[in-house]
Image (cartoon, rainbow, N blue to C red; front, top):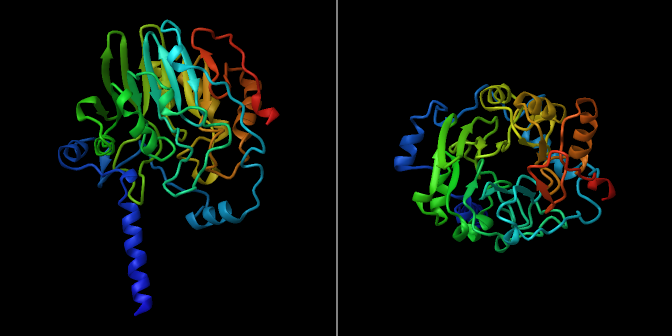
Length: 363
């Protein structure tokens, strides 16, 4: 009897944990009906353009977990504080066209008078577990209180390192409009966002946001889900066209044919923001490997490249600075305009000759 009681208590505890608000909600009602009409939704879930196994090369979830927990760690976290510069976002000249990176895949854009925020994760964690996936020291210099009003919030998908419950809840009063994928609005409405302010789109759709501001929703090769259920909401990338610039917001994506197709249809790009980090050959279809990032940038016809998805969280087993080291090494032969700002450093979007230090070398 005591064993049965303990078992039932454990089950109830697990159910209670996964019922917490931060896990969001699966699409339902009219939203689910709209999703079911998508050509990218089949057999009860969203699908990638091409077959995309989560694990390859004989990888198993248990083997990866065992390696992550027990294998000797090789510089997976920095030994000292990550350097940063805290730019006052509220005092930026409205005529400046700038980008500010916050580490990992979170960044702020001010372009042609509009303020844009992408995948903000500012709570210090990328996990639902207490104390799980903690950010590196020095990377959390910004909070939602530091932001001005945001014209457009872009959310690429619902993983914990891109859709942060605490940040999204706290920054809500400052958000005028959200642009995201089909199904994502169920999370946001559950967390208090007005349905009228949420734009949910499929791949290959066009949104006219304002005079001169157009968004094309484009594919990515990834997956979604905040718990055990996967692919009920859509992951995507974005082409952002403003009165003076053309920018690719890459989200998370493994390498595939979509980069060349997007480059052909919408390029060239003044800037391509591409994931660079948290990779492994065993999940090479859902995160790009270091040798693929510059290839994708060339196919997009990018004049400038910002590598993101690194320098804040440990989500793979490679050394923390390896993504920046390898893209710098690979770019010696390619000679693309790869920019590597510190967290909080101002990137002048109109100055292609702006130089950045290899700040990670001193950490």
